[in-house]
Image 1 (tube, rainbow, N blue to C red):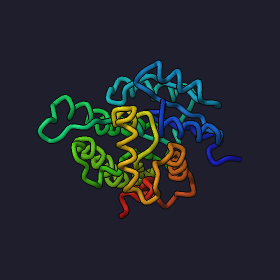
Image 2: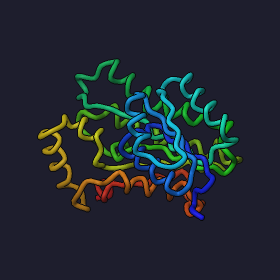
Image 3: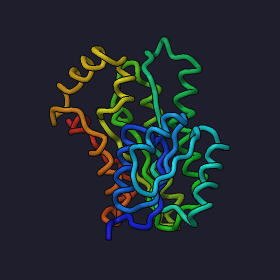
Length: 249
């Protein structure tokens, strides 16, 4: 029997990249998987690529009403959630002198408010002993020019894991942060401007990665499944880097 047979998994931001790869991995191991995405078109496209017991729910994690609808939908079929992967997030570049209120609010609404209430509203449905994984970033512990708002939001996510394990210790719920480095996703291409601009930016970054390449979404998904499994039963409040060694040197 696979590690996640008959387990219930919720993944926010599951329509592409790391979220989609993680949904595929959990579904292959026999889990019932719920994914969310803000755009119905992207959600439909993701569901076409997934096999197994996977349900898509359109919604924005910064909307508390959408989160209520997510968990109401889960409860219509299942009594509890075993794994919550709070993965939805995003950001963009803006140097200090060009940061606008909209830039700040958009990033913090998704990356901080969204993660906070994704977890809080799941608490009544999470089983005791469940696993929560939060998507942070290598930028949360390293300076990056013109990326300070995004980086600060991911530093906040990292501290959520440290603090929430104290709030949830009586329930035996583990909370860990996952910090991917450069990963080959559509989101990364969009961030770098696409086309030749994206290719040049990635080549420049790869020069600093000890592993000598950009990561694949499947490699980060493997780390999520490990943290969610009983094999990681004594890993709690940690930050796991999946970055080819970039932040370790």
